Length: 111
Image 1 (cartoon, rainbow, N blue to C red):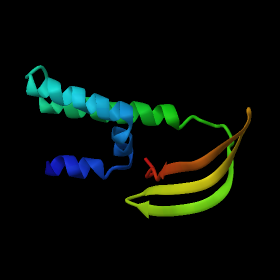
Image 2 (spheres, helix red, strand yellow; image 1 turned 30 degrees about the horizontal axis):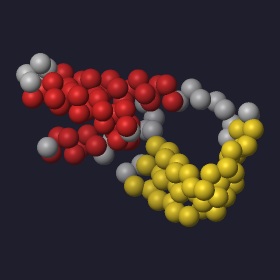
Image 3 (cartoon, helix red, strand yellow; image 1 turned 120 degrees about the horizontal axis):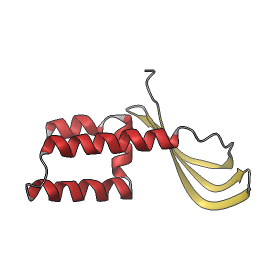
Image 4 (spheres, one colour; image 1 turned 135 degrees about the horizontal axis):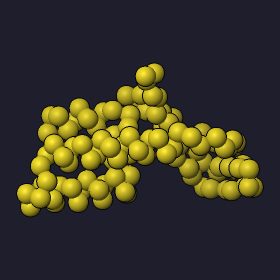
């Protein structure tokens, strides 16, 4: 458990809390319980999931403008979280409106 808590504090561990990440983690935990894979393979798969997902997200070059009322913001462990009320989101394709949006931005240390 201590190793897992340390892993959860990394910026890319944020992706494990997504629906897809949670489903993957649950499935892998079940495989470990059934002795189909070991803990090292489970951790390797989860780390690879985070790495691939991060690579897929970074190349996004689309400009987005967001206007609204900033309800909440915080920085914790290199992760910024913003909650915006009555958000107008201007994309290249047009404008979207939302009552609330949550923006999560991760500081990635230089490699």
